[in-house]
Amino acid sequence: MAKRQLPSPEVLRQLLSYDPETGKLFWKRRDERWFVGTSKSPKVLAKWWNGRFAEKEAFTPVNSAGYHTGTVLLKMLQAHRIAWAIHYGEWPEGFLDHINGIRTDNRIENLRPATPAENATNRGPQKNSVTGIKGVGWCKKSRKWRARVVYQRKQHVVGYFDDISDAAAAYAVAVKRYHGEFSRT
Image (tube, rainbow, N blue to C red):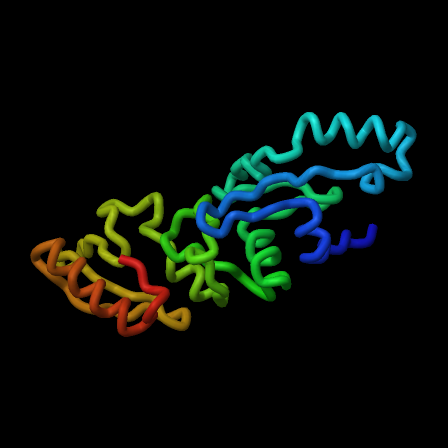
């Protein structure tokens, strides 16, 4: 089965409105042409659809990965990618990073293009983190807190510390040096 093509930004603008300050999407009213080719009357379907969805917030469900998602023309899409396409008039080529790390915050100022590595760098601490501090863990061998940064698939140990706050501070400096604007502590 062929992969369904993405709707163009022009089509998205006909179907949805985007508020860049709140990051929310809203369904626009649809006329009968959007319902041609169905077994029911396009006029009846348009009236039903507009009564149920027009001018209401779109893409409110959150998927298991934490992103607002929904369907446009039978294609499952993520709201942040639609926001980008509507705002800039083109689909993002690769990943989009949520600068503040909140996957449901789709304000245009919170979205930026990123490589997979940059996108991964901007994540918070892993859910299984014992310390809850990104880049800091306990080293049994040295019996100290270890700060380390992963850069270009290699682990770089920043140092070993008696105090966890010293390790966190050292990580913060090192991650900024390695990852720049995509660094997250």
